[in-house]
Amino acid sequence: MDDLYQLGQALKSPLSYPMSLGIIPTIGSYLLPKVLPSVRHQYPGFQLRIIEDQSHELVNKVRNGELDTAVLALPFDIEGLLAFEFWQEDFYWITHRDDPLALQKEITSAELKQSRLMLLKDGHCLKEHALAACKLPSNETDTTLAATSLNMLVQMVAGRMGTTLVPAMALDQLLSGNPELKAVHLNKPGPHRKIAFITRPNYPGVRNIELLIKMFRQELKLKI
Image (cartoon, rainbow, N blue to C red; front, side):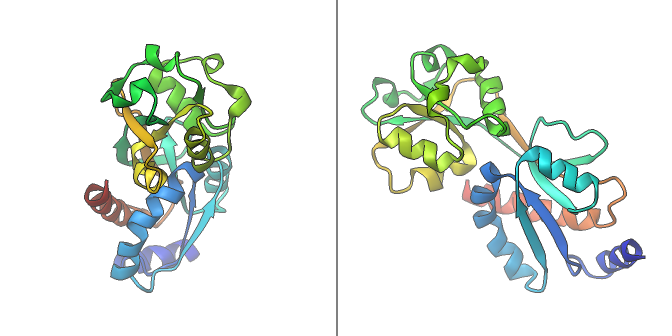
């Protein structure tokens, strides 16, 4: 009955029914500040509950109905769920401005092997996507200096402890106020990461997800 009511509300008035949204840390901190102001402006009455967690936890919560939808980076195992891709982006290598390679416009995998590459700890899909994009095995990275957030990794780079890879969406926030850092595009065929909404096949609010996708795309094109 609740699903039927929600479907009726979605047809009558978009984004008029509460929605629970899961999002991974390596997307939420950088996506939401860019898109939520526009959502709030256009739909001030929209009730959005946001939960931040790792990908595997969000997938389970969407499957069992604890969450209506979630925003993940693909590829990821979402068997049995629907995916609505809405953004693609590349990775950038972050290093100290004094690094001899900082003046380059592109960085190759061979050059990455010569740097002290630091990535997130195991369990973060961004690490797997970064390794896959540059075709590096995990033993080519410095596992002794792994971190739990991109912000911590960037601070470690500023402290000349090594280098890292970050997605394009996060560049403005992570490099703002850090003039000692340089971003160099990863010279590998892209996109290096795809971002999508996931939901259950029987979720009645798919039209609302499609509306959010349209708004998210518009804002991202303006701000990235």
